[in-house]
Amino acid sequence: MHGFSRAALAAMIWTLVSAQVAAAPAAELPRLVERDGRHALLVDGAPFLVLGGQAHNSSNYPAALPKVWAALEDAHANTLAIPVAWEQVEPEEGSFDFAYVDTLVAQARTHGKRLVLLWFGTWKNTGPAYTPEWVKFDNRRFPRMLDADGKPSYCLSPFGEATLAADRKAFVALMRHIRNIDAARRTVIMVQVENEVGTYGLVRDHGARAEAAFRQPVPKAVLARQSGPAGRPAQGSWSEVYGDYAGQYFHSWAIASYIEEIAKAGRAVYDLPMFVNNALREPGQTGQPATVWKADFASGGPTWDVLGIYKAAAPHIDFAAPDIYMPESSKVSAVLAGFQRSDNPLLVAEMGNAAGYARYVWQIVGKGALGVVPFGIDYASYSNYPLGSKYTDRRMVEPFGQVYKLLAPMSRLWARWAFEGRTHGVAEGDDRAPQTVAMDGWQATVTFREFQFGEREYLRDKNEYAEGTEQPGGGVAIAQIGPDEFVLAGQRARVKLAPGTGKPSMYARVEEGRFDAAGKWIMERNWNGDQTDYGLNLPAEPTVLKVKMRTYEY
Image 1 (cartoon, rainbow, N blue to C red):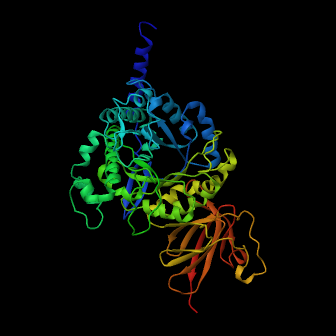
Image 2 (cartoon, helix red, strand yellow):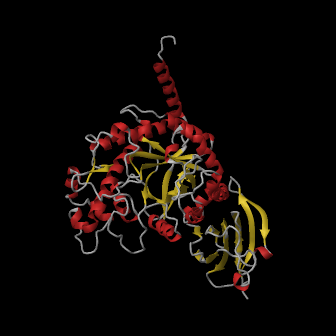
Image 3 (cartoon, rainbow, N blue to C red):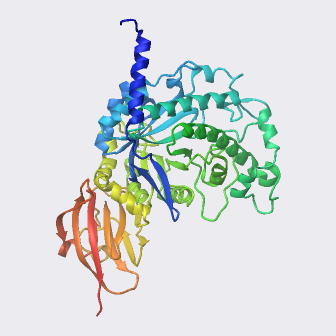
């Protein structure tokens, strides 16, 4: 080696590579933007719609990735969300191994996918399973939470100073490495910090440091965003201000503050958008306060009722995202409404991969979400039924693949329309009832299980329904691209458009077609006659229509 050690040669090569990366013209960093309470994720300088799939938890190793990419291709997904576990990148304290990350990023580029990395650090589904062994089995140095009787919990304490320092160090090392290998390409577009945090079975930590903090006054930043129950003092200790809610609210603040330290340090190294995800509690009713914690959800997580606390305690976290494993349509709608706020972009970070969830993609993208990420989109021989599909092959992927295939070529256009406030969406409800959508000067009425020809009310001798409609599966996303022009994308639904003025109207033109990758509309045929006499009937195969309406005078 002519006097050079292998280590010295590797260092020289890395120095040259780093210099080339630094000198290369860097694309614009992914970032979140807000306008009039609406949000967009900018990737390469333009709005980006995440049509994603999340891999199973244990698919985060190079040998498992082929089964991930195969499923993502069949799903027509543009983004992979996948864990990076603390235990795999720092198996020995202070010794980091990012070989998996290197392989993941390189293969994502080969397959034309963007990445959302999920940091499985101190908490994954509230537990410490993904911490390195040197963390999870040293509870003197890395303490667990204590209950009121001093009994240890399974969950690591958010007041563990050494735990926070170690997690932060590992996360910073990860972000630095991503910057070094990806600064010029921007394959990684977002990072989730921790995973489904909180604690089951214990409302808060009762360790010595936690008890001392619990007796302190509630921070002013929290008071400004999360008021207490009616009749409580406006300031004071957690118990004084929040009463029966004090334990949950305090624990939310403690965990959010811990996450803030990690996110802040990571973004100082590489400033990618960051978010937290949430194992849901039952969705709330509009205008109604949340019920007091009764061991019925993970206390301390970013549930809909404590988003204000997370905003106050973790300003370096851009948003909290719901993980939806409640298949009921009324609950899905309530969850979406609870998490889409002017200060909180909507991203469905996880969702069941059973076929019945595919209809919600229309509703989610229509609501102007940053995107949607069904869970378990890989061909590992593992099913998380009953939370998701029983299948682990193409039968699992196909319902989502049909929808994504239609949306993928127009995803950039759709993301722009959503940011402009032009989009709307509905999913067929469990009650199969009609739904109405109010738009600018127009109203859409969406019905389901209709004959493609004729009105059911006039065909009362016909009581059969189309094959494949035994379970709710319809949906439509609508973009109003002009005063009287619309793009409809959907399946298994009938749409009727009517002006808000009450004037008579007709279809000026209804084109079926598609958008190409450049955003150009390509017409396949013009609908008229039988295809429009009874409304616009979107078949089982997802379909895109470009519609122009006109009103007229008698």
